[in-house]
Image 1 (cartoon, rainbow, N blue to C red):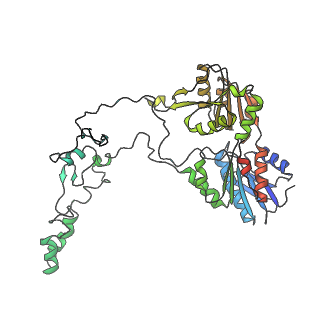
Image 2 (image 1 turned 135 degrees about the vertical axis):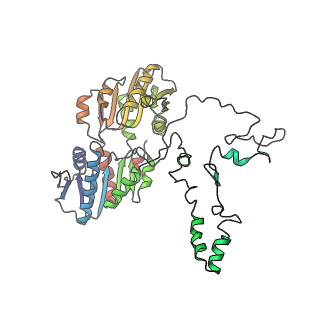
Length: 451
C-alpha cells in the first residue's frame, strides 16, 4: 500500500492504469473526462489532490491530439488543485517521431557513380592532394584567372545586378559614392542653403534602392539563386520542442516515457525526464519462447534501430544482421518504394526483427519478406509500441511474419482479436515499479539494467 499518492487515468489506456493501481494497492483516482457537444474537453478532478503526489497515465496512441490536450488539461487541473507534484506517465510519447532535424534520413547510396574530374582543372568541388615530397603540386587559380567570372557561376557578385553595375550612390566605399557625400548635393545644401540641391540628395541616394537586394521580386533571377539541397526541408515544424514546452507550461514536474523513438527527446525538457526501456521484456520473451535462440539472428529492419538491436544481440550472445534501406525514388510515384539490402547471413536460421515502433508496419513486413527470400526458416518481430494504424493488421496477416510481439503501451485488445499472430507483453509492472520508486525518492537505475 502506497500512501499520499493519486493515480489518474486518461481516456487513452484506462486498462493499463487500472493494472498499475492494482499492483501498487491504491484505488484509481476519480475524475470526469469527457467532451462537450462542441468538441472541447471537459475535465473535473473529483478527489482531493492537495499536497498529494499525482501520477497521470496517458498514452499517445489512437486520437493523439485529443489525448495530448486531455493530458495538459489534467495536469493544469491538478496544479490548480494544489498538488505537491504532478508526474506525466506516457507509455507511448506523442510526436516522438518528429525530431528537430532539418534533413531527411535518406541513407547512404547503394552505388555511387564515379565522378570524372579533369586532372588539369581545379573546381570548387575539387579536393587538393596532401602536400608531400615527390607529389606534383595541384593546379590552382593563377593571377590571370578572372576570379569574379568563375564565382559568378555559383553565386551572385555583390556589385552586379542583372548585368547592371552599381551607380556612384551604391558604391558605399568608393571615393565618389555616398560614403564621402555628393559634393554638388550635400556640400552646397549645407553651406549655401540651396533648397533644390538639398532635395536632390535623397533622390540620388535611393534612386536605385532595392535593385540589388535578394528580396526584390521584380528580379526573379535573384530569388532563385539559392537552391535547397535535395534532402533539405524548407519548412520544418519543431513538434518535439513544442510538445515538451506544452507539458512543462501545463505544470508537469516530471515526465516518464517508455522507449523513446529518439533519445535526444530528453534534451527538449527543462524538467526531469526518465526514459524506461522495454528491452528486458523482449529479452525474456526470446529466452523463454524461441527454441535454440542462441542460433538465431537479431536483425534490425533499418539503420536507425541498429544500436537497439545490437544491445539485445550482445547481451544474449547472438549474431546480428542489418537491413539497409535506400529512400531515393526516381519518380514521385515511387516515393513509398525503397530499395532494401541485407547485410549479414540469415540462411537456414531463425530471424528476430527488433524495432521500437510499428505504425503502418510497412518497414517490418518488407524486412520479413527480404529475410525470407534470403533463406530464413522463421521470422519473429519484437516491437515495443504496436500502433498499427491504417491497414497495418491486414498487412501483417498477409506477410511472411510468423509471430509479432508487442507491449501494451497502447491498447491491443482490438488488434489481438484481428491478428492471430499477435502476442502482447504487459508493461504495467515496469511502470508500477517506476512510480513506486519515484514516489519514495528511490533510484530507478535498476530499471535500466538489461542483464
